[in-house]
Amino acid sequence: MSEIRVRSVSWLLRQISSCIGADSVLHNVIIEGELSNFTMHSSGHWYFSLKDEYSSIRAVMWENDNLLVNFTPKTGDKIRVLGDVRIYAAQGSLQLAVRKMAPAGAGDLKARFDALYKKLEEEGLFRPEHKLPIPHYPMRIALVTGKETHARADVLNTLARRWPIAEISEFSALVQGNRAAEDIIRQLRKADQMGFDVILLCRGGGSQEDLWCFNDELLSRTIYAMRTPVITGVGHEPDWTMVDYVADLRAPTPTGAAERCSPDIRKVHDLLYETEKTLNRIMDERLEEERISLDTLSLSEVFTDPKTMVEKRRMRLAIQSEKLTGGLSLLSAQLSSSLEQSMNRLILASRRRYELARRDLLDSEKALILGMDSVLSENRKLLAVKAGLLDAYSPLKVMERGYSVVSKGEEAVNDAGTLQIKDEISVRFFHGSVKAIVSAVERGESDGKETDI
Image (cartoon, rainbow, N blue to C red):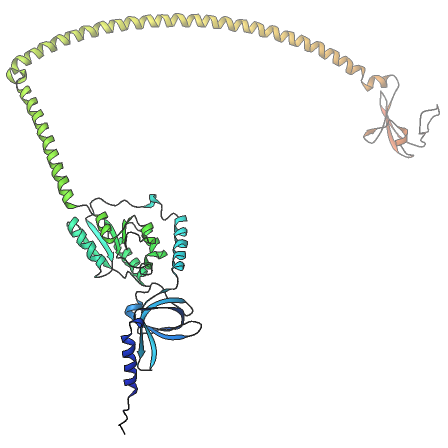
């Protein structure tokens, strides 16, 4: 009977792990499922499970891989991962070692991008009038990009070739993962405070998930508020992130960003050479003109015969002086005569105006006196008529014929019906008045009977 070979548990798990490792189907496998039991360990590693409606599998994502994830996962999220299937020997369980993670469905990312784009556009963050001008010859350039990346090397090589006289300062930052936006903001703000001529924000190509940190809202607002011009070169030509819209200038690639911010030093040399030639030509032409002018001037009388020139000028000056003196005397006499004539005309005109004004005043005085006499006469006649009417309608005239006025208190009585027996009344005659007490009242029209008082 052959000897029975007994194997250890470790041997069995190694055999299973070897079989799994040899199966290419279980490498770089992409799995989509619901995240459960998600744990962020203090070591930085992530432990979780992926499940669907029928099954579940344990998974792990090491810290150096999960640093590149551009969102914070939580239990219940539907995600898509890339990794390798393996055996976890310590527990003898099947496990998925995840290297990349993204939310399930590219449509969700596009919807988030479109919503943020609409929000920032409505606030005016993309308007051309808010963009800062890019300097033609920047001497201090800040580069914000990943450390030891191809994008960094491309930018530095391009700047060294095109504009080697510029001072380049590097600000290394994470350019992928859920902490990348925060790190980029910190480096941008730091560079913005140091007075650079321009800032380059660069990153090489990648998937939409890899570039997602450049769609961060706070990062976009930070770039919009910066005082230093910002040029972005993120991804490749078709890639557009939110920072490209708010930046002062967008380049299709990191190399393109370096080219947009720097002049070609060879062209600058050619321009300086042509400018120098133009200046030299202008100076030569100007010197030739001045030389001809100097030669002409050297042949003038002021240099060949200065004494004769001075004598001629002295004689000309004397003639002009005599003409000026004579002209001034004649002008003075003419002005004096004109002034005297003007004064005489003014005096004569003043006297005529005075006489006319005096006559007008006398005529006005006579007309006023006549008008006043006429008004007074008319008013006297009117007053006499009104006085006669007043006298004719005076109660005293009526009372003089034997009538009297009866009053009760302050009011006159014209109706016996308003009186009552024992009322005290006053009777006024043309001469004097009496007080009486009413003893009887007869109402209605008088029938000739007398009323006792």
